[in-house]
Image (cartoon, rainbow, N blue to C red):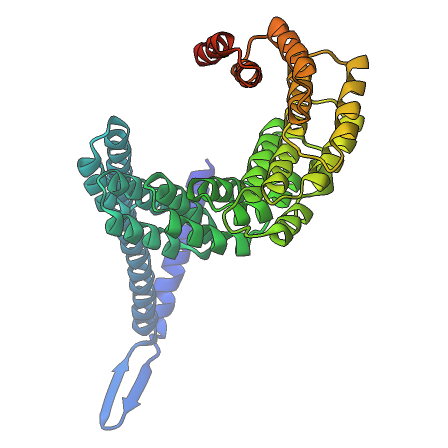
Length: 389
């Protein structure tokens, strides 16, 4: 019913419009330069409506073409991304399997269209590294760094690792120094730098790095203690130390908390003895043993030629009250021997051998027996000293 009413009013409006057009058509006159155009008002209005409709239609169609064009571009772009991703995955697979050449080609080919170009270049650098192609490796790493300024540190760390693995230690040091300037406290940089210094036997730079290794907890406490001990023992025995003054300077460089370390104390004391500073070595070892009993120090004490050998022997004998050990008896035997107390020396050395047969004790006992013209037993002791491991 509503539809019929609407149709009726539409027809009525059309009839009214037709009557109006018939009774008064009106006219429109358009002039431009020497051109002129005349038509009815109603035709001009109709033509204007048609033009507006065509304009609207063109706009709609152009929008549709634009959307279509964007969709085509997006499809091609998505296709390239998918292809690059597939090639990247395939290249990484070849890298894992150890096919370095194939992996490198696939990764570099995919890098041009990949949204993961950083991964492509870094992985390709690993592939080139394993082929010994260090120039290509460095070029790939440069390309990786150029992708973004945020990648410089990460790629530099990769480069330092690869240089270390390929034994390009000088290059690794240069790279790590640059990274250390960027991030002075970065744990991985410090860890790799300490390994490179260790490989290069660069003990002085390693010594300077030790405080940072401790503060940043790069190594656990046991590893750090072992490393510190190794570094300072080597530096105290270094060939660059030419005299007693140089040795004293090296000892001052040892941190206070390490000057009670028995191994470091022994290394320093033996160098003092080598330079003839026995009295200083005796005093240092005596004070150290009063605070901390350690048999390495006791053995070193037996090598010292103190200014007062009687007092030195008395000090060593006083240690028997709390300690009876093979090394202490060996020490006492050596000190008695130095004073030509043959009987006493023999007694202490035999006590040492009874507790633990050692090459040093057999040798010392053999020399005493030789002094006493007991050649048979002297030869027997020398033979046993060779047999003991």
